[in-house]
Picture 1 (tube, rainbow, N blue to C red):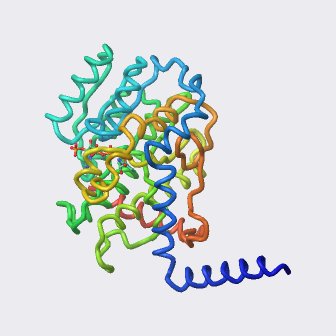
Picture 2: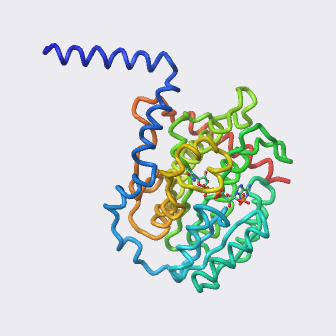
Picture 3: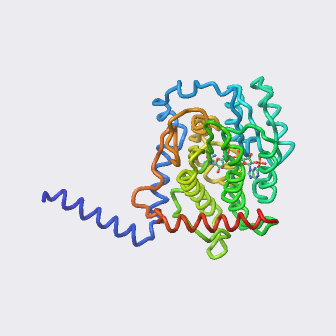
Length: 340
Ligand SMILES: NC(=O)c1ccc[n+]([C@@H]2O[C@H](COP(=O)([O-])OP(=O)(O)OC[C@H]3O[C@@H](n4cnc5c(N)ncnc54)[C@H](OP(=O)(O)O)[C@@H]3O)[C@@H](O)[C@H]2O)c1
């Protein structure tokens, strides 16, 4: 073997050994950050956008009905604005009446579309989510696409009034309950979809199938958030495998300048502010998944492309048994709230 090749093989072996020895956390963070700098920024979006087909968004959606959670702010608001601008019926789901009403009025006045309905719901309250979805199903209103966009990153361990860790209650359980409870409405559509706004942060975590309350480890808001976002990706893939009627997708919006990033990640925001995407750039792939045809069911999308669900050599893959256990445990938590 040529001496240069021998040296390269030796170096690669050392790097791999070090990587395995450090439980891959530092490796994952480094690879994630460098990937982010080249792909998740505004420049990354502009580079990817050179390959976008504008005709993908030409379809007539004026007869369709979309529901978007967390639509009063950031990426969700931009999504609602785009869909309303194309004449669709848009149900915006917000937890605060003042912020929700302001968003509704602004979307109606910017688009001239008055088919915008505001619903008040705190996604972190499981009984409220179930009641809201059941009432919506009973009302027999049309629903073609649900966009699970509402999300949070709470940096201290905090419990909701139901005793649930707040990030889990919002990001994982809220998404799970709203999606499953709305299935009877979605299944009446001719092309139903559930689009869940996950995050590239999920690349940092392997699925934890059972530790939903994060009480058995030191608490770090960004890692709990990353775990929730991994859980969204796994539940979406499992739904896609088991539901024959509805199509399910997750996506990463890239790094966009929104209140969530400003408030929950102030250091990250200060360092990268000039390189962050606009909310509309972050929303682009959500709008595309809502309108375009021919996407891969169960896949994770970034900039209109299905992308890998794991970083190379990051050891984040889970087994089928681990994923099935996760779905069973999650349903066990959900069913506690369904029965009372
Ligand atoms: N921005 C990024 O770089 C980035 C990157 C990856 C993933 N994401 C994901 O993108 C999604 C949208 O976030 P964003 O960046 O656009 O932030 P944002 O502007 O702060 O929007 C978050 C939205 O979620 C709502 N929300 C939070 N908790 C809720 C609850 N318990 N019930 C109902 N609504 C709730 C917020 O309502 P209030 O206004 O009432 O708080 C707000 O409308 C999130 O799922 C986030 O994880 C964002």
